[in-house]
Image 1 (cartoon, protein in one colour):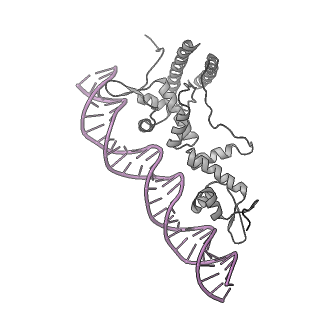
Image 2: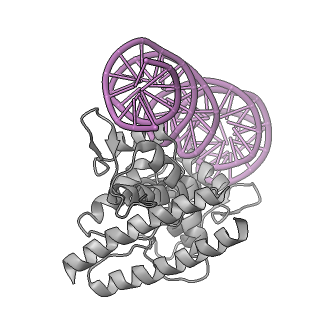
Length: 124
Length: 124
DNA sequence: CGTAGTCGGAACGGCGGGATTCGAACCCGC
DNA sequence: GCGGGTTCGAATCCCGCCGTTCCGACTACG
């Protein structure tokens, strides 16, 4: 069996919700507010989030939920840094209950690492 | 006539309102929200603004009206710079330019993983 | 297949951030 | 002392932001 999958590239909205700690409807709402947040969709219309999408969501979350920007203010900040291609490690503040949760986080983090490795090999 | 008054030390609320372009009730409201904004009062109870008060008001105005902070967010910004006296960039962002940056992120991520492993072994 | 997940849109809601109103007190020139 | 302008704090009102809930319909997947 392939007991783990390398290079997980896409996430459903429920996965993203769990990873980011944001309700699904908040994700949809933010998507309607931030043109930068534009996950692809599959043929059925379901959202297909990439690691980049997720890190953008974390960025918005930091601005809006932690630093206290309005949505409008957060847009400005994002707009002003458009095009810098930043990748960043997000602080996973998920409520960790079980070791299953932790395993999931490890898997996702590895996906993040794989993503980084890709970028690295593409850039170095 | 004295064609301008220099070194005026105190201002009434109506003067401050004119100077800052903010309604009087907004000045009173902000005063109720920001403990830092605390103009003295005369014996009659009327507010007596100093130049320092006014520049603080302008600072709040920049944060709330231009940059798009909520009142709460503006409080944090003001609070966080109390006593360091330096203008600062609010957000911590990692602009990925070089593979050195990526290496750094990888290192940090490894630390993050180690942390997770600790938690995992503590719980599993 | 069943059922769990997702979809978009519309209606709804809390509350933050003022805005307005009020009666009372004060200030100042006369 | 009198009248007009300014200010006061408290109470009340209000609008829009930021979600939140609800919905019926569609689809992925075991």
